[in-house]
Length: 407
Image 1 (cartoon, rainbow, N blue to C red):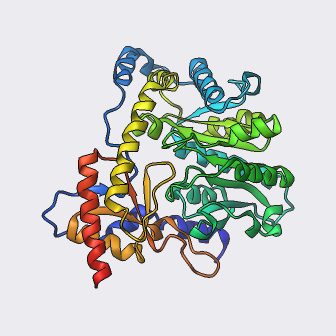
Image 2 (tube, rainbow, N blue to C red):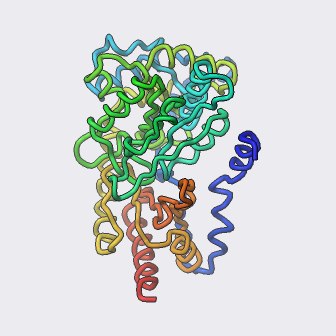
Image 3 (tube, rainbow, N blue to C red):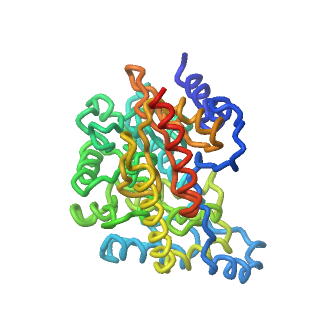
């Protein structure tokens, strides 16, 4: 099969389209609890509605590709506060670009990185993109759409669910356009430390590819704030060369429907390469939504409150699921990555008997060269409802898993 036909076939294998047939129908009298999507169920900050209402006239104007000056400056200031960066490192015009949610940011970062590398490679050599496995499905799709070869980096208990760079073949590194990492990780809830992030950046610089850090869950943590790509790049290297991060308000501020995200980092890559790709093909963020996003990036009080909620939800998970042999308390993010032996079978039973819709880890995985799926044994459970509902959900989960173990 040709690479182009192979990509077209793989794109049709969309994870959420596979979920329904895999789970079947539920016969449970319980009210359904939908834990297959990582979507916060909390009320959004009150300021969002009032600001959008105050800018109704903006709907008659096209937004600028680079976003408003205020939004870029708010994001730049947040990056400097969050990662202790010197303002001289973060130029709001060249280092920061608002995007329509983190999915779009990751997609255009990968597309621009592949186009950049294709100009450097000999004719007939396809760029490669290293991707975590398991992973957020948009990353895999973006690599296929960009016309590159995905090279999986398995995240397993043996490596702490973080990428093992020693597994990266030199031939793939030489044609690498990008190396995508996610920390805090979706779905494993693992966190990379500064040394691990630095190693990815050094690899990117030595082979001249882009290190792409998906940091959508950077603000959902329970103890110390996780390190980030720009924080390490600024501290260790004094520049953002070969580094780009993607982040959003969806999890930080509990507003996935607001579609507020950004990419930031390498000035040439963000300010020119991604900018031009989006100028041609990207949807621009409506001005009224940008105004609301600006206010949210400038405020930490609501983020602290959400973080306290997630700490309480983690405590519920620890209490209810802590007795299960496959349970590991999440380091950050709002996911429980639960080893159940056979994730697809467990998810099917959870839905059919208890009306709990969980995401099997196999759906978030891609086959390794030996045919294995790193997430096959797991299910992903997000902490997105109120504590009482999550406690009910976990009680149902425990009842199913205990019965499976007994059988």
